[in-house]
Image (tube, rainbow, N blue to C red; front, side, top):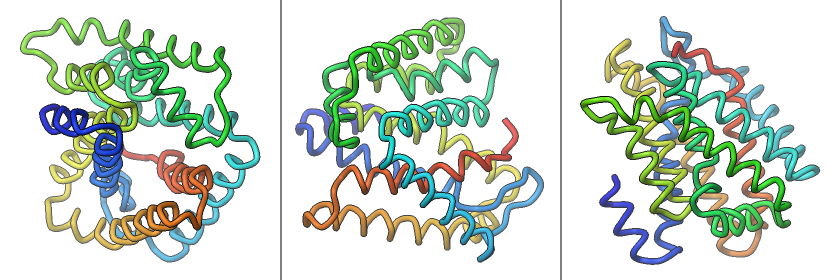
Length: 247
C-alpha cells in the first residue's frame, strides 16, 4: 500500500487524491451490512430508508454549519476508529487520532487547502492548530505500540501515510488499512466469506453507484464539491452512529 501510495504521490496531487478516493471506496463493504456481532445480514428496506433519512439530515446540517459539522464528524470518526479497533486503548486511540488529525500535524498547509475546498470556506487557524494538536496526541498515545517487537505494521503504515502523502491519500489509506480491512477480516472470521459477500453486496453496489454519480456530477460542474462532500459525510455518519461491532 505504501509503495502504491508513493507512486500516486509522485504523479502529482490529482493522482494522489484519486487513489485516496479509491481506497475509501474499497473500504465501503466493511459497513455495508447489519452486523450485530452474532449474525450478519443485508439491510432491510426500513433500515435502508431510515439510514438515507438520517444521512440527509446530517448532510443538511453540514451545509448549514460546515465547520461545526466537520468538527462533529471528525470526533465521531475518531470514536468509531477507536471503538472498532483492536489492542490496548492507547493504540486504538492513537491510530484513530492519527487517521483523523495526523495530516494536520505533518502537512498543515495541504490539509488547510483540502478542508477549504471541501467546505467551501477557509478553516480558522485556531481550528487547524487544535486538529494538529490532536494529531500530536495520537502519536504520543501510539508510542508504546510503536516500540513493540515485532513491529506493529499497521500503526507504522498509518504514521508513514500521514507523514508522506497528500491528506486525502493519507486518510484513505489509513481508513482502509487500519480500519476497514481489519473489520472486514473479523467479519470473515466470524461468518465466512460467502455469508459476508452475500450480506454486503447489495449495499456496496448502491454505495459505489452513488459515489460514481456524485463524482460525475462534480466533474461536470452540475454539483458543487461542498454539497457532494456533505452528502458523502452524511452517508458515512449513520454507519458510525449505529456501530455495534465488538472491538
